[in-house]
Image (cartoon, rainbow over all chains, first blue to last red):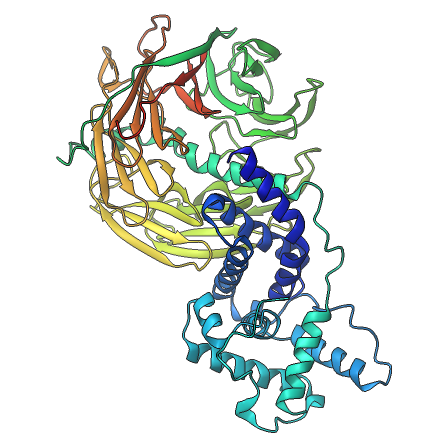
Length: 183
Length: 456
């Protein structure tokens, strides 16, 4: 790696570390060590092809998705159900409906399996379409649809306060059109 | 709650959550670059160095003979090089060297460690062994260097009939021994002590256990033991793994790859494979194992083999038939094994396909007392920037082969004093700053090959 590439890599890491770590934390269920490891592995892979990557952020994020899907494939069922608490900073139920809702949803998300949560993170945090999620994870659109559906169903079962779906099938974002870049 | 409300709530939670301390740690980019370099170094130098030297020497010599007839197109071979320095190290017998920032470190019978300035070739410091008549392990290794600490080996009880072996942490700056830890046996090879992210994994306290040691204090962080298997210790991507193969015919005939949690030592079996296997090395996130496929009784016997590729992420196991056990160095998806009569054979690490074979044209003398034994060439030292695999023989001859085609790209020579044949002992060659650092006995040198321009 020549000094110019090294400088570019350093700038990218410094500028985007927190955003990537945030995504990794969501993907790993709030396990800080695993999240940092996930970001570092993705950056190492990007480093090997740095000169040839046009969109470093897109590349690194995609590696993170794939790496995460590999991890959950590796895990035993009993490990899938356990992970560190996700958003600890959701606040305290103060009687206002919005805060209560955030706490409820946050706690329920933290109890999903990594696979279920990854699917929701890609759909709702990364704002990827079903087609894009399928492409990123190397699975079919049908798998994305069914996993998302099951994830939402489990979210509801974990948090009965969310109530039954008004239209069971319409729970997931239905459009396959990309909703725009991630924030 | 209807679907839209749930949709909004999930988005809200995910987008409003920010992890603690999200800012980038100091020099995280530099740490990633160094971590990747370590991985490349492990991949390039391979864990097979010691194995190629001694344990599998016979299998290598007979495992993949002949040429496949698909010679690469002729190209210009450069004989130009720039010998930057050559140093005769003190002491008679040297076992292993490794490179660190700006320096080369070696250990031998008379010295637990010696530092040589990589720019000038001058010996900058040395740590004498307590018993200068101790045993040697010429196919051994040095565990490595981290944060200005050299990890080396020394006799546990110098002068005693069975001295034993300590893993020793030497502070390069102060030349002080920071700590020692007695190992289970006197193996001083690449699996005896392995640096991982968070510590150093030592073959201790028994042959069937490992101890993770704090690399600054030597304190035992955790231990892990097993039964009915022989396990090699390796670090892949900074994570400790065990490559386990049955230790006898009575043991369950399964090999296993076990990941050890760096923080706790908690084991997790990544994959199992039927039958005994030998660890070849890693290729990216995959582990390569070699197995016998022709009813051989031991890995020393030549014959058909199986290449097993295990994806560490998914645990997926793929197996491919081969004509011989491809023990050697792995570089960017290519296994560089030694063939018959001073030849190199390249196999695809992805599917075991033989890519090319090439006579190295090196001088490997036979041992007149033992005609079946001869000198060995060094393991390949691969410069991935120029994609050249370099080899060195005990007489000082060097060659560089194109990694992808096997075409000869460079020949070089370093004058070294004549020495008696030491069969089964290989010189050491390391890539350093687009050049090479080589060690033949007590001779250490740095040479910069001048490669022909590509396309010529």
